[in-house]
Length: 296
Image 1 (cartoon, rainbow, N blue to C red):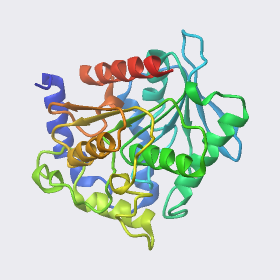
Image 2 (image 1 turned 30 degrees about the vertical axis):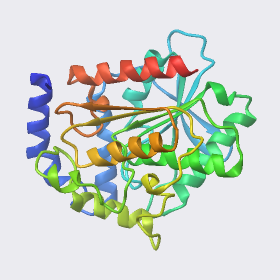
Image 3 (image 1 turned 120 degrees about the vertical axis):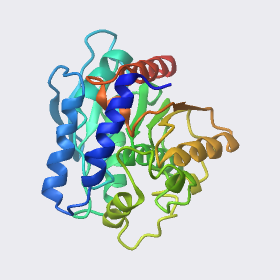
């Protein structure tokens, strides 16, 4: 059962954020609101902006550990919102708990740059890390929401190019089906405290342009995941994206991938962002940290 603090947070978000999220259609306003999400995380050490190849991002260094491991982190925001700023607090905590350097990629956003912009930037960042001397067996690709789907799409693209794959992947509340074919899109429509089909549809339209929503490059539940590294998938039981995570895990296992699905009771979308407010956020991040250390 979710903690009292989680239940109160869910109720508050349902009455406030859910009614407003992505409804204005004002990109500047929505992006500014998303960046304020970092205030919900325990504040960590400031990140360091740096270009990695042709793309930029923000590095977060762990206080302890050998620092050999690297997490390439792909932030959420429906491919339209989000930035290293919105995810700074969570990335800093993840770096400490995983004892790894975390690079939050500042990939290009839609509608200014629709598909395949985000995927191209993710591929470029991974290749640049290899060129800098990072070892693939010490790299983990992680992401939340749209970034969770993008993380899987990136690994598929790397496999198809014959590139060395990372050690593992982490998907937090992944948006892995832009065609909205999961039952939870309707079943959890009222329970979800942040997202609904309407807000997700607005975001998806910006990124997809003329691409079909069930294209495996944006909806990896329709892709062949054979050969991918171990996956950790976390999702809240009340999310409209619950079935995205459940089906992603099922498709991965069917393809022979070592995949672990964790369904957290009563948790809101990407609750690990909210470590200042709820105990389950740190608990989830601790599990992620252990998973990353185990596989690197």
